[in-house]
Length: 388
Ligand code: SOE
Image 1 (cartoon, helix red, strand yellow):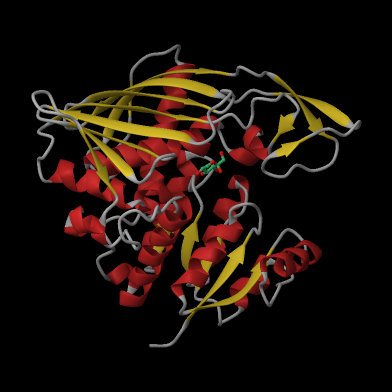
Image 2 (tube, helix red, strand yellow; image 1 turned 60 degrees about the vertical axis):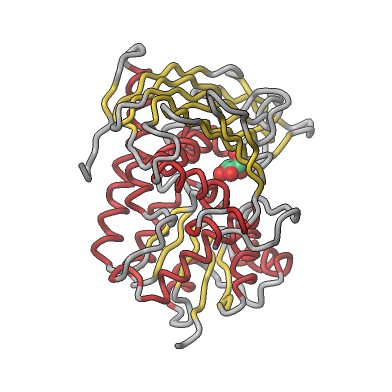
């Protein structure tokens, strides 16, 4: 089979991890990258060890050597770049959230479905072996019927009011900030692990840091401004959120999300309580799965390929005692994406763990319902289900 070529648009923070994952596959050509200007693309190509920089993303899309487009642009460009790539007949791997609003996500999902190419959105936490183990345990009834699904996704990188990011600007980051950036990951994970859908939400959102000092010049993802030249920016998007949840299998749940919470770096935790047993996984200790019992001792399952469910084993590459983490899970997702593309793409069954634009669209509807619930003064809001 001919070698696949990839092109990446938007060479910021996350781009290095896409390239790293692709390089680890070993059989994909990196055709080149495109950025916001020919100069920035050249500079980043040098820094990332990529041989070619395109003048702009349209030039990248016109290159027949590019079969797969990785869209790692800031959120407000997701739609434009992904749509153009789909129209050019390329397979698309897009960063999450799929787009800035549920309406845009829907357009992207429909365009991807009609284009007949592979479409993937990077809900990368699915790629952890023990996340797949938890999913298998729920699916095989090891927990009994899930009754409570809860957790958190907490960070602190926006704590300092001198830190500013495009993620906080609704025109660039999308209708929500913390929910879109990290709440989206948690909701996807909760649905993926439990194999059920969030059907209704009740959300209370808040902006704990309503005024920030942004650098006068442009902002990178995690920029902290120490320069004398600053502008004051009023923040309207949420930086903390508390949400009650209802699932279609009858389970209840709740999640707290925040990005201004000192001490919490990338603190994602998901717990599922069933009638027979419980399971909990946390991103910062990804090689352990807590399994809780009522009438026997609790256990910690290690990421040991020998003890994993067959469906999870393929996501563990090192023997027991050799920790695997964030970049390995990211690589697993990219490996699944390329496996799907090689097998024939949209016409063929996708790997079970792989999140597609359909998942990205549904996820946007969940976040959208949270925004609506809060805007209505904190009332239950049903999540629209286009696939129900
Ligand atoms: C920043 O909040 C960020 O990098 C997110 O954009 C990622 O999706 C998440 O995995 C870690 O935090």
